[in-house]
Length: 216
Image 1 (cartoon, rainbow, N blue to C red):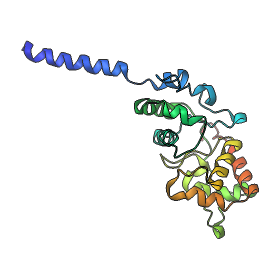
Image 2 (image 1 turned 90 degrees about the vertical axis):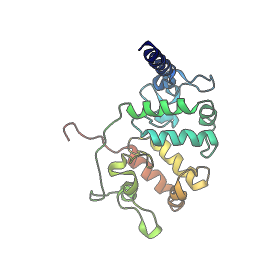
Image 3 (image 1 turned 60 degrees about the vertical axis):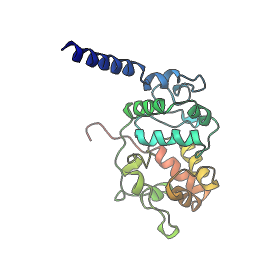
Image 4 (image 1 turned 180 degrees about the horizontal axis):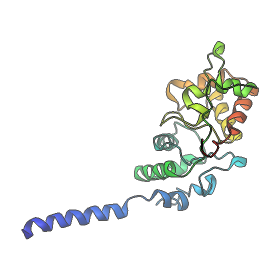
Protein backbone atom coordinates (compact mmCIF):
# COMPACT_ATOMS: atom_id res chain seq x y z
CA UNK A 1 0.00 0.00 0.00
CA UNK A 2 2.84 2.38 0.79
CA UNK A 3 4.24 1.93 -2.70
CA UNK A 4 0.89 3.25 -4.04
CA UNK A 5 0.41 6.15 -1.64
CA UNK A 6 3.87 7.67 -2.06
CA UNK A 7 3.52 8.35 -5.79
CA UNK A 8 0.06 9.82 -5.22
CA UNK A 9 1.43 12.04 -2.49
CA UNK A 10 4.19 13.13 -4.83
CA UNK A 11 1.70 14.04 -7.53
CA UNK A 12 -0.39 16.00 -5.02
CA UNK A 13 2.67 17.89 -3.84
CA UNK A 14 3.61 18.70 -7.44
CA UNK A 15 0.12 20.02 -8.17
CA UNK A 16 0.21 22.21 -5.08
CA UNK A 17 3.59 23.52 -6.10
CA UNK A 18 2.33 24.31 -9.60
CA UNK A 19 -0.67 26.12 -8.17
CA UNK A 20 1.54 28.19 -5.90
CA UNK A 21 3.68 29.18 -8.88
CA UNK A 22 0.73 29.93 -11.16
CA UNK A 23 0.46 33.48 -12.39
CA UNK A 24 -1.49 35.76 -10.06
CA UNK A 25 -3.65 38.00 -12.24
CA UNK A 26 -4.39 40.47 -9.46
CA UNK A 27 -0.71 40.80 -8.63
CA UNK A 28 0.17 41.31 -12.28
CA UNK A 29 -2.51 43.99 -12.57
CA UNK A 30 -1.34 45.92 -9.51
CA UNK A 31 2.40 45.20 -9.49
CA UNK A 32 3.36 44.01 -12.97
CA UNK A 33 4.64 40.76 -14.42
CA UNK A 34 7.74 38.73 -13.67
CA UNK A 35 9.59 40.64 -16.39
CA UNK A 36 10.09 44.24 -15.15
CA UNK A 37 9.12 45.51 -18.61
CA UNK A 38 5.57 44.28 -17.94
CA UNK A 39 4.58 47.24 -15.82
CA UNK A 40 1.48 47.26 -13.62
CA UNK A 41 -1.77 47.69 -15.56
CA UNK A 42 -3.17 49.81 -12.73
CA UNK A 43 -0.66 52.55 -13.48
CA UNK A 44 -2.64 53.60 -16.56
CA UNK A 45 -6.02 51.89 -16.18
CA UNK A 46 -6.62 52.74 -12.51
CA UNK A 47 -6.75 50.64 -9.38
CA UNK A 48 -10.34 49.64 -10.19
CA UNK A 49 -9.59 49.12 -13.92
CA UNK A 50 -12.18 51.74 -14.80
CA UNK A 51 -9.69 53.59 -16.99
CA UNK A 52 -8.47 57.16 -17.03
CA UNK A 53 -10.70 59.09 -19.40
CA UNK A 54 -8.63 62.27 -19.54
CA UNK A 55 -5.58 60.34 -20.72
CA UNK A 56 -7.52 58.09 -23.11
CA UNK A 57 -6.88 54.85 -21.19
CA UNK A 58 -9.93 52.56 -21.48
CA UNK A 59 -11.94 50.70 -18.90
CA UNK A 60 -10.85 47.07 -18.64
CA UNK A 61 -13.00 45.93 -15.69
CA UNK A 62 -15.68 43.40 -16.60
CA UNK A 63 -14.51 42.90 -20.19
CA UNK A 64 -14.69 39.34 -21.47
CA UNK A 65 -11.41 37.51 -20.82
CA UNK A 66 -11.31 36.16 -24.37
CA UNK A 67 -11.41 39.67 -25.81
CA UNK A 68 -8.73 41.00 -23.46
CA UNK A 69 -6.52 37.98 -24.18
CA UNK A 70 -6.79 38.52 -27.93
CA UNK A 71 -5.88 42.19 -27.60
CA UNK A 72 -2.81 41.31 -25.55
CA UNK A 73 -1.81 38.76 -28.19
CA UNK A 74 -2.34 41.35 -30.92
CA UNK A 75 -0.30 43.97 -29.07
CA UNK A 76 2.50 41.44 -28.63
CA UNK A 77 2.50 40.39 -32.30
CA UNK A 78 2.07 43.91 -33.62
CA UNK A 79 -1.32 43.12 -35.17
CA UNK A 80 -2.64 45.96 -33.03
CA UNK A 81 -0.34 48.96 -32.94
CA UNK A 82 0.15 50.82 -29.66
CA UNK A 83 3.55 52.13 -28.51
CA UNK A 84 2.65 51.81 -24.82
CA UNK A 85 1.04 48.38 -24.86
CA UNK A 86 3.37 46.62 -27.29
CA UNK A 87 6.42 46.36 -24.99
CA UNK A 88 4.24 45.50 -21.99
CA UNK A 89 2.45 42.68 -23.82
CA UNK A 90 5.74 41.41 -25.23
CA UNK A 91 7.05 41.05 -21.68
CA UNK A 92 4.09 38.96 -20.47
CA UNK A 93 4.07 35.18 -20.68
CA UNK A 94 1.04 33.30 -22.04
CA UNK A 95 0.19 32.24 -18.49
CA UNK A 96 0.39 35.84 -17.25
CA UNK A 97 -1.85 37.01 -20.08
CA UNK A 98 -4.44 34.36 -19.23
CA UNK A 99 -4.32 35.27 -15.54
CA UNK A 100 -4.68 39.04 -15.94
CA UNK A 101 -7.44 38.65 -18.55
CA UNK A 102 -9.42 36.44 -16.15
CA UNK A 103 -8.84 38.93 -13.33
CA UNK A 104 -10.13 41.81 -15.44
CA UNK A 105 -13.30 39.95 -16.38
CA UNK A 106 -14.02 39.30 -12.70
CA UNK A 107 -13.53 42.94 -11.62
CA UNK A 108 -16.73 44.90 -10.85
CA UNK A 109 -18.03 47.04 -13.70
CA UNK A 110 -21.04 49.35 -14.12
CA UNK A 111 -24.30 47.84 -15.30
CA UNK A 112 -25.64 49.94 -18.14
CA UNK A 113 -29.22 50.27 -19.34
CA UNK A 114 -30.07 47.86 -22.17
CA UNK A 115 -30.99 50.49 -24.77
CA UNK A 116 -31.97 48.81 -28.03
CA UNK A 117 -33.13 49.67 -31.51
CA UNK A 118 -36.69 50.23 -30.34
CA UNK A 119 -35.68 53.23 -28.21
CA UNK A 120 -36.02 56.83 -29.40
CA UNK A 121 -32.92 58.03 -31.24
CA UNK A 122 -32.40 61.78 -31.01
CA UNK A 123 -29.22 63.27 -32.37
CA UNK A 124 -26.53 62.00 -34.71
CA UNK A 125 -24.79 59.80 -32.15
CA UNK A 126 -27.99 58.08 -31.00
CA UNK A 127 -29.15 57.49 -34.56
CA UNK A 128 -25.89 55.82 -35.54
CA UNK A 129 -25.81 53.81 -32.32
CA UNK A 130 -29.43 52.63 -32.51
CA UNK A 131 -30.38 52.85 -36.19
CA UNK A 132 -27.16 52.94 -38.17
CA UNK A 133 -26.95 54.45 -41.65
CA UNK A 134 -27.70 51.49 -43.87
CA UNK A 135 -27.64 53.58 -47.04
CA UNK A 136 -23.87 53.80 -46.38
CA UNK A 137 -23.54 50.24 -45.08
CA UNK A 138 -23.19 51.40 -41.47
CA UNK A 139 -25.10 49.00 -39.19
CA UNK A 140 -26.33 50.21 -35.83
CA UNK A 141 -23.66 49.73 -33.17
CA UNK A 142 -26.02 47.83 -30.86
CA UNK A 143 -26.51 45.13 -33.50
CA UNK A 144 -23.06 43.76 -32.69
CA UNK A 145 -22.09 45.34 -29.38
CA UNK A 146 -25.39 44.54 -27.68
CA UNK A 147 -28.16 46.68 -26.15
CA UNK A 148 -26.72 49.89 -24.77
CA UNK A 149 -23.33 48.89 -26.16
CA UNK A 150 -22.71 46.66 -23.14
CA UNK A 151 -20.55 44.21 -25.12
CA UNK A 152 -21.13 40.70 -26.42
CA UNK A 153 -18.71 37.89 -25.63
CA UNK A 154 -15.14 37.77 -26.83
CA UNK A 155 -15.76 39.39 -30.21
CA UNK A 156 -17.55 42.64 -29.44
CA UNK A 157 -16.25 44.73 -26.51
CA UNK A 158 -18.35 47.10 -24.42
CA UNK A 159 -18.70 50.65 -25.72
CA UNK A 160 -20.90 51.98 -22.93
CA UNK A 161 -18.97 53.93 -20.35
CA UNK A 162 -15.72 54.08 -22.30
CA UNK A 163 -14.45 57.63 -22.68
CA UNK A 164 -15.31 59.60 -25.81
CA UNK A 165 -11.60 60.24 -26.26
CA UNK A 166 -10.79 56.52 -26.35
CA UNK A 167 -13.73 55.53 -28.56
CA UNK A 168 -13.03 58.36 -30.99
CA UNK A 169 -9.36 57.44 -31.14
CA UNK A 170 -10.18 53.82 -31.98
CA UNK A 171 -12.65 54.76 -34.71
CA UNK A 172 -10.09 57.11 -36.22
CA UNK A 173 -7.43 54.41 -36.02
CA UNK A 174 -9.68 52.11 -38.05
CA UNK A 175 -10.41 54.92 -40.50
CA UNK A 176 -6.70 55.56 -41.00
CA UNK A 177 -5.76 51.88 -41.14
CA UNK A 178 -3.51 52.03 -38.09
CA UNK A 179 -5.81 49.60 -36.29
CA UNK A 180 -6.89 46.57 -38.29
CA UNK A 181 -7.13 43.62 -35.90
CA UNK A 182 -10.87 43.07 -36.26
CA UNK A 183 -12.34 40.16 -38.29
CA UNK A 184 -12.66 40.89 -42.02
CA UNK A 185 -11.93 44.60 -41.46
CA UNK A 186 -15.54 45.04 -40.28
CA UNK A 187 -14.80 48.10 -38.17
CA UNK A 188 -12.52 49.52 -40.83
CA UNK A 189 -15.32 49.50 -43.40
CA UNK A 190 -17.75 51.07 -40.92
CA UNK A 191 -15.37 53.73 -39.64
CA UNK A 192 -14.26 54.81 -43.11
CA UNK A 193 -17.89 55.48 -44.01
CA UNK A 194 -18.25 57.90 -41.09
CA UNK A 195 -17.48 61.62 -41.03
CA UNK A 196 -15.40 63.36 -38.36
CA UNK A 197 -18.58 64.73 -36.78
CA UNK A 198 -20.22 61.30 -36.73
CA UNK A 199 -17.19 59.72 -35.07
CA UNK A 200 -17.30 62.34 -32.34
CA UNK A 201 -21.07 62.08 -31.94
CA UNK A 202 -21.22 58.30 -31.56
CA UNK A 203 -18.21 58.33 -29.22
CA UNK A 204 -19.93 60.88 -26.98
CA UNK A 205 -23.19 58.93 -27.11
CA UNK A 206 -21.67 55.76 -25.68
CA UNK A 207 -19.49 57.68 -23.22
CA UNK A 208 -22.67 59.11 -21.73
CA UNK A 209 -24.99 56.09 -21.80
CA UNK A 210 -26.72 55.96 -18.44
CA UNK A 211 -26.14 53.22 -15.91
CA UNK A 212 -29.01 50.91 -15.07
CA UNK A 213 -31.05 52.14 -12.13
CA UNK A 214 -31.10 50.00 -9.00
CA UNK A 215 -33.86 47.41 -9.16
CA UNK A 216 -34.10 47.31 -12.95
